[in-house]
Image (cartoon, rainbow, N blue to C red; front, side):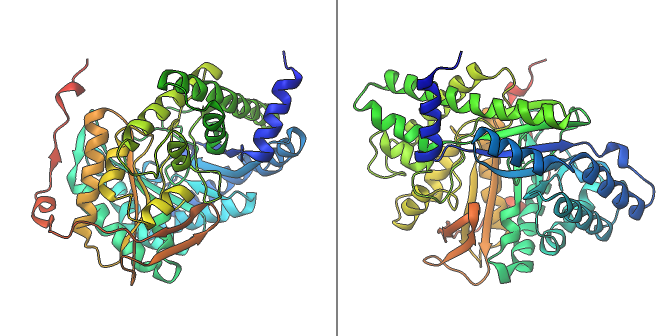
Length: 452
């Protein structure tokens, strides 16, 4: 039963503490679009998306107005394109990307994800062609997002794919150099990728999903930060309870939106992703949550422990609020999208090494990090390998979304605007990793992967 206090508390969260539903994402299967002619495939993909998602934006907007809960993004995720493109060439794949872009623009969504491949154990001809096409695809489209899964705890790390992705990221940066390498902000490399993630750039519609599904991603770092501030100088056990109760309330809001969107669209409800997704706006920062716990600045000693507790408490509170929690679910630490992270990086308190340590206990990984434009492809691949290894060994999702900004060096910044924000160029280690990356092959799965 709703009571006045709960209603007023939720209103205050929305008005004063930046509570929002970050995304309503429609997942759409493209398996029934497979064709032996690429033009026919593109036409079928366009028709399937525009028909299935034609009411997504108006329905989400109507829910937003009626309930009074901001829904920041409306998005689409599709079956990984490498699974439906057959023996396509890279040029064929780019044509598919354009079809995705046109379809997404027609229905009015902010982003469409799924232009990607699952290559944790090896690459098919279709997967290789798609990966080769990524720089052109992301430079020639506006709202298409791409992801490549290069490892899993079960399969190990495909180091050939890791090496390839370093080169692809460099090429993507070069082809979008006039826009601060924006293409790299739409490209993410994963280990243990979830198949129901509603957040970009890693969203895709998994092979075990139904024909279509509604997945909702909530947010609310400002709400959690305010709750911690109100709690005052309490013990960690008490602080964890405060975060759990707050996460419960945030997740219930997301579930309400998910149920309503599912009912009105006639599309099955999938999951709620209860991740704390920050923005560049003041008061909407995961870094500020950590600082509210008692850290002078995010990145100082104690940051990893604080983030670990936050991530755990958010998950515990969220799973009590919804029976269908999925996606990434936890705390995101994208540097360019978090005002507190940006500040910590600018003053030198947040390094790549500290961020890497933090990724061992949070939801994703090295996210939206700008690095010098002259960084070699081998160094990018080695950075990916380090982060992916954390995910494989710890049986968790990790990812890398880095932006080697052409012509930029440490002390400069890149500017994307909107939710993508801006990011200072962060320094990397300079000794070469080329000989390590050149070995190729596959790093075997860890022993604890043998669970059958």
